[in-house]
Length: 112
Length: 185
Image 1 (cartoon, chains in turn purple, brown):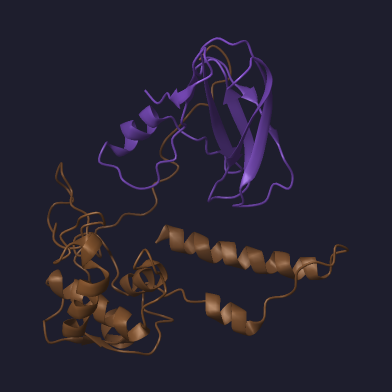
Image 2 (cartoon, each protein chain N blue to C red):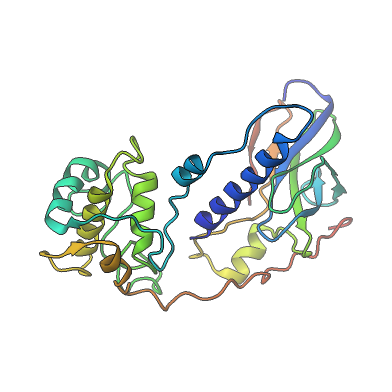
């Protein structure tokens, strides 16, 4: 990121089990979440764009998104996924992936 | 396997959209012709359905493999830049599972579909059906699943029982529960 101020967080969500019902975004390292806006059309098993306006104050932040599909399945954290499937688990890694934004705007992987 | 199923769904969706667009006020696009659809409809079922005519021997497969595959997958499929293709049987339940065609894949016809669709990586869909049968036969031979003098066609490929065939479990989802906490998490 180059300048603090208003930014739009955007991405795409997908489920193999139907439509995306909701996408939540956190900008405070997972402490709180806000519902993002979905862009129509929202179709079954189709990539669905979400967006959330954000005011970046220029300090370090961890952002992440969490998709929920029409069956109610909530995208898990990596820790939740590994706890159930074990660390030799191979396919279908659909874990939430957080990203750290440094004060200088540099973006790095923040998966713990 | 799942990604192949998804690919099929994606194609079906695309056709529907094209159909709708033909009647749209934008006047763009056209309905795919049956010949075009046939060209894309190359999916091979796990049971060997939709395998094309053709035949290939283990010995010819060795030649094709050495020319087209060995640079990435190793001379005997031991792996390199590309995935290891051979061995690993009996390791899947250990701490260091070795997942190969021989140790992991549940169905042999998938091998044909994958090679024809995706390999060699620098020139996918460049091999003839006979060459794909041959190189499939060679990879199965390297895994001890086909004799060195064997020849494969659609019927023979569909008849091969892969060692890991019955070790898969059903889709366990939803098995991971994220409570979707909104505040004070």
